[in-house]
Image 1 (cartoon, rainbow, N blue to C red):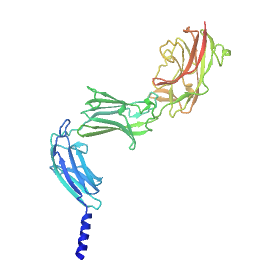
Image 2 (cartoon, rainbow, N blue to C red; image 1 turned 180 degrees about the horizontal axis):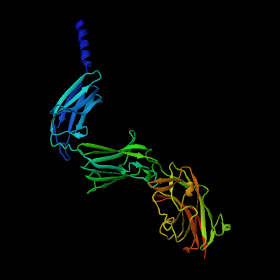
Image 3 (cartoon, helix red, strand yellow; image 1 turned 30 degrees about the vertical axis):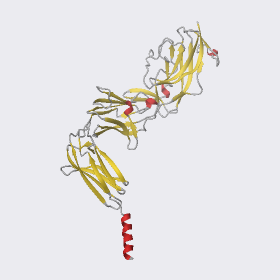
Image 4 (cartoon, rainbow, N blue to C red; image 1 turned 90 degrees about the vertical axis):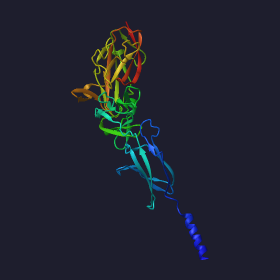
Length: 410
């Protein structure tokens, strides 16, 4: 009876005994040549775990140095394949014979180990390099005011490689690659040669730029074999944001200055040839950043044979102005008559590199008036005039605001 009981216990223990912790370890092929275009560029390391374990895979070279490929990575019981292309720590190992070690350690601390031999020949261990990596300027104000609104990132790539360029504050990543311009002999964005990125922080698409702060501009390159290179430069973002302004709901106040009593709220305004037409609007900065503007001052009088260039108030990228335009305009440009957003004395004056600039600050409201003397016969007696809010070389923010018919008598 006792023997029968002992046999039952031994059978039960045998039935519950776990399988091998590490089994079926293979390496195929056992020789690789990691270079671009190689027919045997990588080997597959296969193994089976009888129970959950932490797995390490490493190579030992002829001098006894250890090169870690996997370090204590948790794996559930089952079969696994690990593809090894010769790269460890972002570099392809040099030619030689290596011992490939697969180790497993379970939750109870039990370990198992297997070794295989791998030969590496014709290894391409030369990493891609970023020569002359530059970020200019290193302080960036993405707010569409036309001053330090863009950053140029440039480098020379020494070998074909996939490149990622991005900004990082340690927590968040902001891609730059979509703005790349490649300067290469062939049309290949990963080619050897000079590469240039035009970064605007997203403001060209009216996207909010990354928050103000200091970032690492990081460029990472990896070639076809797995050699990697990383370089960094610092970039400070300040005063970033999308500018926004509007002509307030009070709309446009039209009047012929020569005969003030003829101002009509509805219907056409009647003006004799050589008479003047004026408008008045209120503009408010409704955005998070200052809005840059420039002359001429409100109240400046244009003739229909003039424009902002003849006043020597040339268009500048990012500048905001209020303009007047009219039906049949033959000047060749929209809104030939333009005025500053408010009087200079009411604006924020900023001096940058010895040049003064004027800004309408967030929340600020100003009155803008403009006058045009009609000295040229229009293409028709009844002509529509209108007002617009312009961000030069960017967009017409508000177009054809309150068109008004004006009858020109001559």
